Structures are given as structure tokens and as C-alpha cells.
Image 1 (cartoon, helix red, strand yellow):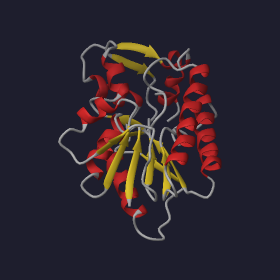
Image 2 (image 1 turned 90 degrees about the horizontal axis):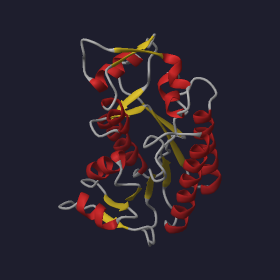
Image 3 (image 1 turned 60 degrees about the vertical axis):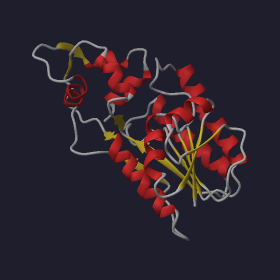
Length: 247
């Protein structure tokens, strides 16, 4: 079985490709082939643009599409993010003959305990991906906030003054990059077994649980003096705050 990773130069895609290449033939799709070639220089990862062709019978990981976390997230941009992901699924279906399954990233519905635009985004993404793929199995990824030195949330919080939220005592689901990659490698190995069944959804979360303030301290480091911030301010303007409010 071959592996195709769309969006393979992003944080999760790159780490996954580098881990899987020791066990499978891995194709990374990128719109910037030169950059992708540089990132994977010295490895056996195969780089392709989105023109194809791609091998039949592959397991597809789709992490492509406009980033939710890269900049301010409004309702208008949330819809654009949804459409960019669905457009990529349509294109991958046309490129890859008879895929084993599609593993679709960027779904946060497991994070969100109440109805919100982000929860509706995630559930719509899952439903429409299944409709587009027809009989091809789809596993929807439902990750916690991905933590690593290079994650978008880490970069954002390190630009802010030291913060403590009021009350900030609820738990926020998160997953370390290492734990996410380990879980996805196990999923790939399972997919390679004949007649295996993949889950309809895979929640990616690490332990121990962290409160919002513990998560903030982990991202920013411990400081003697911190700026108190009322939690309701996370509800204003930027939908990314919902990821920190709905644990």
C-alpha cells in the first residue's frame, strides 16, 4: 500500500511523512515542489504537484486547504476554509484511482461541547467528504489543539504578554505532535491489513489533561507576573477562541 499526503509540507503532514517513509512508499503533494523537495532532501519521500498521476490503491491523508489557525478567523474565512478542503477532496478523488480510504484532517468537532460555527464547520466537512468519496471509507480526524514548538498556537501565544485567564480552570483537549503522528502511523498500518476496517472518526488527544491556564503556562513558560484576562474576551471577533473555550 502506498501513502499519499496532501498538504504534506505542513506541521502534521511533514512529521507524518518522515515517520511513514520507513514503512511505506510515501508521496507528498505540494503546490511548491521546490520547497517540498528542499524540506524532504535526503529522504525517500516522493514529491509531486497536484497534476498527478498518483498510484491506485493508496491511503490518502488530506491536510491541505487554507489554515484555520494562521490568521484571524471570521465566518467568511471559515466558509473559505471549508470550500478549500472540499475542493482538494474532489481533486484527490480524480487523481487517485480506487483509494483504500481517505483520512481527512482539520475537524475539531470533538473539541467543541456546544454548538458553534467551528463545530458546524467540522461536522459539515465530515458529511460532505463522505458524500464526495462515495463508497470509499472516510476517517475524520478530530484533533485536540496540536502542540509543538512550531505549532501556530505556540507562535501566537509567544507573541503575547504573559497571561492568566479568569477563571481559566476548564480543561482544553490537546495533542502533542508526537502523539498525533504515532496514532496516524498506527492507522496506516491497520489500513494496510487486508479487509481491515478503519474508524469513521479518530479523536487525537494527549494526557494528562490541562486546564486553560496550565496550557497557557506550557506555551508561554512560567512567569512571576502575568496579565489577568477575562475569559469572555476570547469570544470577541476571532473564532479561534472557541477552541480554548469549549473544552
